Image (cartoon, rainbow, N blue to C red; front, side):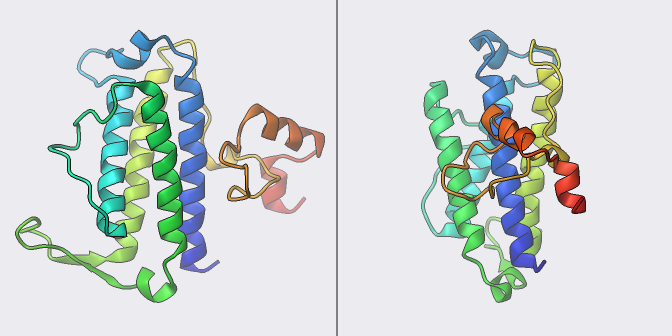
Length: 199
């Protein structure tokens, strides 16, 4: 596996994990989603919104588009359906971007505007890509923990639980990990573990 394949895999996994989070959160009462469940911590929606804001900033900077927001916690969408559409659109755009980088770009250097990043001038572009996906993973962990305080309970989104079968980037596979995909995997008599081991 070269680095290009690695980052595409990260983008595909992140899209799958985000979709699992969205499916779970969609079952909650709006109050469980929008109000803090644990004193001193953000609500589930506030965390999800923050991740989307940061991802939108990253997409704009890397993709050469415009996106202005006062802070990384600015509420982008008061409407849940509008948030869902934006989250899925952003995941698709992130996958499109990382799929378009060649090895030379991925092993290049990212230079920062000194007026914005006075303490950091440059760092490997590969580290930048890794950072944005780690940021998502960090906050998904927070959401999974908060979901344990709801009827959803413990949500399994580790890479081990990505179902085998259709490629994650195949047409119509945006919701890989759905009940339909799991049923198809069961019918094929395989598991994620056996698929990876080659058994």
